[in-house]
Amino acid sequence: MIDWSSFTPWPSVAGGALIGAAVAMLWLVNGRIAGISGICAGLLTKISQIQWWRLAFLIGLLLAPVAWQLFAPLPEIRLQTPGWLLAVAGLVVGVGVQLGSGCTSGHGVCGMARLSKRSVVATLIFMGTAMLTVLVLGNAGVAP
Image (cartoon, rainbow, N blue to C red; front, side, top):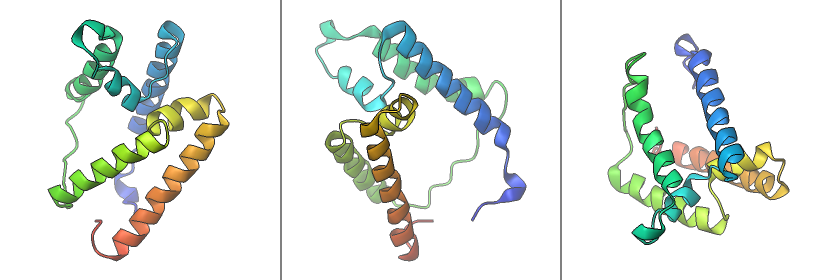
């Protein structure tokens, strides 16, 4: 259920524009796709082979909440899901990223913007699976 009284579209529009700008800059400057799973995997190489742009990109992701606090308070985080279930979900997502040869950011943001057929199919599959999971687990009382 959407709480329409708390609906504030402008921060979402601004966030989407910033994500789009970052993705475009990475593509134009480095010729790389901003797929977070690929960027993280690239950091798992030997330290002498680290591509520093990957580290800078991830540091930027981690510093984003700090920058947000300069303009507005961070939203309250309320977790109603048990930690073990979040860990299992993370592992399942990791397996899916490997099976799908990419993650939501790589396929859903970058691939869809490039009109990649493979990314369109991957995005339809992971979005459909997410909706089905919420429907099934939400009715089972597991999801909030």
